[in-house]
Image (cartoon, rainbow, N blue to C red; front, side):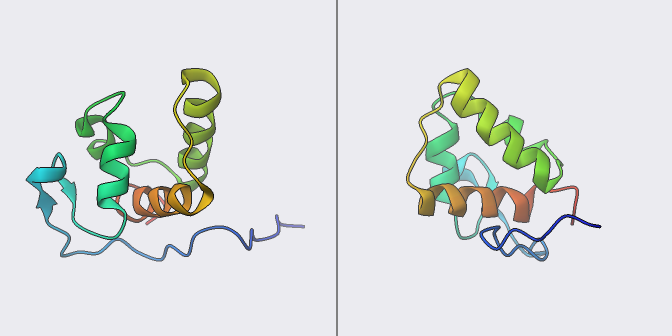
Length: 96
């Protein structure tokens, strides 16, 4: 029996092919969640580490938890967290 789908999981279907890098946001691709991702992540590392990733959706979820629990990353409200994870999975997922 397969795992049940998570109804709270973000709806991520494919990465936009026309998303252009935004130099004001560390060259993250423009799109919903780019600004939230930029400000959440640059407190600890550059956007280069994000841009080089092509992780599975499950690995993004794992890394989020690891960064909060082991690295002391500030965890925003659920809506912002979902926006950021959806953005990361849309633009930097190996599942797409």
